[in-house]
Image (cartoon, rainbow, N blue to C red):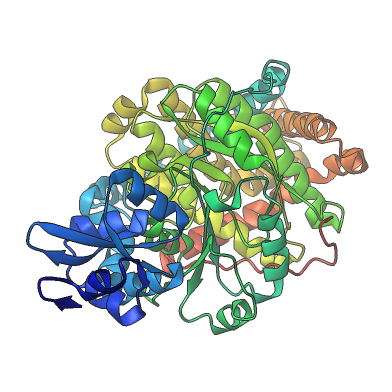
Length: 559
């Protein structure tokens, strides 16, 4: 390539030529770390480095236009997939290492790589020893303490739900109208895929319907190198240039956040969103997100779109799941956002300002509910998330095992999240502020504890009723107290959740599910089973990712 002190191809033709994969690989090997990071984001790469002169190769029209604006001398052009191949060929080992350990190495206080700290182990051991001693010496006192404590936790969660229903009328906001000028920014779409061959058609159709200039899209289809079925399926498609396939080498932990971290250095966009394989976002969602970001203060760095299900009425389980999501995304999260409280983000349709996402350190690859964790970390950085009035339709798990494994993973991740952010409670409270810290306790710890203890309270109450101690003034004091608190908790908790369910299905215009709300207490008991499974998995396999199978529904989304 170097003849007589200048590139032969320029001297001969004066026009850019197509660079081969081998030439791109060789050029990558000469890059510094800073040059490599910049090239992966812009697709403008130093190609021939000479004393006092650098010639560049670009991939894609956006990169070519940017190089022209910067006055860079471009001597070669390349196919985007060839340049991505070269990046992965040369830098894959370092990118993979960073995708697994960057957060742990740079801000270990936020990483779940260590399941529980030594101090937390000591504290829990002391508390367990103290409770065991008191149970032996004064069981009535322990029962009173547990009864009061768990009742307060249940009632705190109930109070949050009451607030969300009451605040519903104040949560509606006028449509955001922004006068867009100039070209729209590049928008990166992360789509992590694992064993999703059966749903690729639906995924690509949903992405193609997005109302956004195709030349400003940067879609990353993120595949695991071991997932040969999905890889072979995608080879059957001729994808446009704005799609890139990112192949994640096989390494532990095998989690969705690790895969997205691996793809993050390749992202070209100023904004980013995550979609799951079965997701069907409303076509104007990216434009709405841009407008909302433009109209929001700079501390709003994340927007959460509303999630709902296209197979809502398939069976009893999908109906209950849909009601639960309606309460969460149409009542609870909007109320939290209006109070500037931390949001436990959903696992998909999170829109980010890209620079903030990089500063956050990406996702925690060891946390199996990386979305909720990132929502808490975002609050600790002094930033906020807001709700986006746009829907993404998903496939609700329609089988008991699929639902149970998914819910156990979510609850296990919430346990991880609470332990991570409670390593230094004083620091967390100072970074979040005291009110947000209280929201964090109620949302994360409160929901986990109430899920685990719900069947225990129910059993204790039923036993008390059978024994007649609930109404007996001559009965033992502890039985009366436990029974009274249990009745209060159940009546208030059930009533409020059913009230919220009725309100949420009305907002969603899901009148067909209206009377299904009355079955929600049975659904909560199933969640408790998943909670205990989550606790066992947290002990036995904390970083294992329970794969949710998609494409099982008989109901297909509307085209």
